[in-house]
Length: 416
Figure: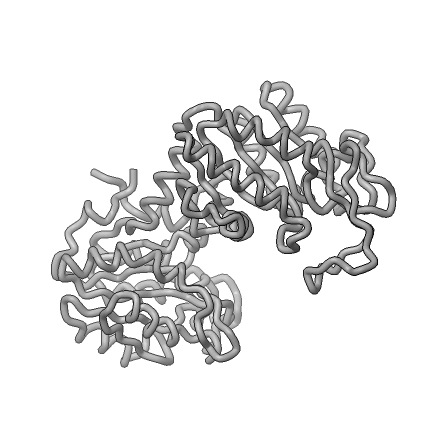
């Protein structure tokens, strides 16, 4: 068990907090969704109650080691200030400039400073000015960041799968470190789901590519009682079993692997549920997320898809079949949509499953949803408030499900 915020003394101290403020901005630099900022409020409010001076570090976008005006964190300070009802200081330009260091040094207990985008420095991502991997450059940058605080708090779950200066590096240079409340919650729900699940344990996996989820499936085959596969991934599995998939998205180079995973599941007596019917179309406008007016949309009679058509959602019989597994589950982990859910006409399968997961949760199951598209799906279904836990880190939650060590977590000290 890693140390968490209440395990360390932060009273009156300068606390360096890694947060995930990688928020979407419109052309006018206005924040269009502030959920990542709101997610950090419990940690910040606790630190304020402890009379700590708070120095927040974050990144935004991929500026690739250069100062890019459109990727400045400047718009975040007023929004955070609004949410907290308290002034938040900000220094433009450079997170480790003399001006930033002076602002940190002058910060009084109960005050908050947000540093400029960490990724304006290539060293944050472990590279030198030439763009080459350089651990010593990263360590030097981490040391500069650490010099501004006395204690480190990791509260950016969306970045803990990266071994960056501000995630794994700063810990070496500060006396004490711990997980913030957001990261603590992520570890609790994801960790308990994988290591101590109440059974039956069901995993629902969707998305476009089997290759993105190979390690997740392999790891989950050692833990779950049942797996539901939807989205374009399902067509690779079906084709590996000799089922015709029309012009659906299939990874032909992964057919042998898909067959192998199905064989493993059978050997382990794990229920491996694939769609038994599909919503199909002969035309789709992916760029504009639309269905052309002359497109033909059908429901197949079974799992086979005729030539000239592509699968875009699971059909009604599949929803019925999947519903049984969802209703009987006591722990549910979901990552990835079951169809092209961004287009309303093809979102029914994903939305219906989201509603079933919410119902199962109300009946006492624990549900964990991770991955940007799955999160959008439960919101689209209007059931996001009924899910036990929605993960804030797409890549991090996926790597957690793969059983990988997350560098930003591994760097934190253990509870004594």
